[in-house]
Length: 168
Figure 1: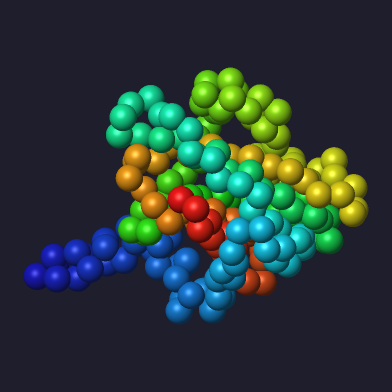
Figure 2: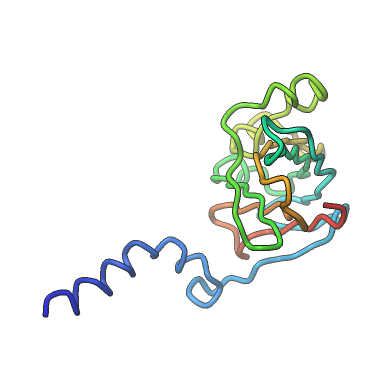
């Protein structure tokens, strides 16, 4: 009899983070924009510059290098907020950024590999009016398609910013 109560409760507790992110529960709507379009979001003007597919460590995997930027309009908000970035494919699979740049990124695009990641540190030394160029790299299956970069800034009035990429 206890399983009737405990099992559903355990499922809800385990899935709470995912449920909390759904627009129905959060009351926030995601903003979806196409590549190259400048979009106001969370105190900045955001734009996806490029998503590059690079060779991966195996035939079944690829490294995706995401280049994006934000021109701060509310520097205080951006410098004090947590920024989270994900890559999502057509199947809804979510890929977290790699902790360190893959050697292929440092070899092929050393100037991009040196860019900051999306974080409050990226905006800490930014001046008003200048764009902050950022980069993140991801490991994805070779067959992943229709990739989108998802940017979430804690404290944003809207949900996530979804930057679509047509050529994936």
